[in-house]
Length: 290
Image (cartoon, rainbow, N blue to C red; front, top):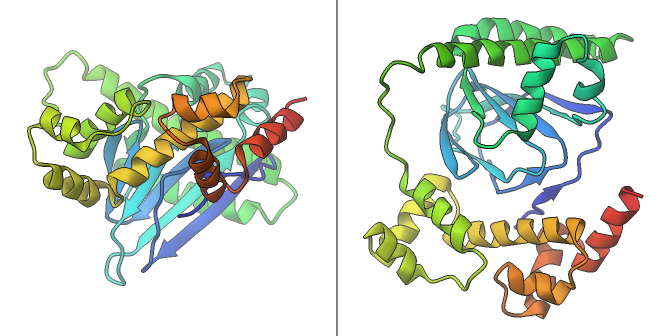
């Protein structure tokens, strides 16, 4: 399993332009230190974030908050490639300091970055050609001495597209809407969110959903591309990372509080998934924030 904590070198941003995957796309649950904007040119699959599932298709723009657990699950082939551009940026040193002249966009960025239950997937297919050109122009600008100003302009342009989309949604808020039924995987993730601190009981979960144990496992795998065990483990490790950063609780107590019965197993698994021991992770975090 890949490491689930991506230490991105923010300078104050990183940019990946039109990366194409045609085979062996290994999506996995992970999170970043900074914000992420993901724009899709083409592809088929799902994005799983905040216990919700969104469709991947042409013109989708996704916003991931710092340290927010998410996964991109894509079905790729030479006939159905996955093409995207990605921007990671540090909101503390990038957006916050440079958007003060644009209070509306600054407020939107703060809302997207810190809000609870905010929209995180935006269908911008109507703006596809505009965003396509904006991405291409920005990519060319990275070869010039004006890349810092251009990167700020680029972020504002994407935020402006998101703001227009949110505005359109709010205009329709008074009308009666039909909402889709949640995927089984979403219901499972919400259940895990309430229960991950306790020993996992597939029987209780299957009873909650009125499904057989085998079907619960199969449907989660089919809808997310990963097993129940993988998702549960990642969720526990993520909570452990937060506790290691934000508290002085002993590692043994953290292990128990996130659902691991054996502290030695927790340490072994943490090192495998994060790339360092819990103790080293805590020391590293404390060093960074001194």
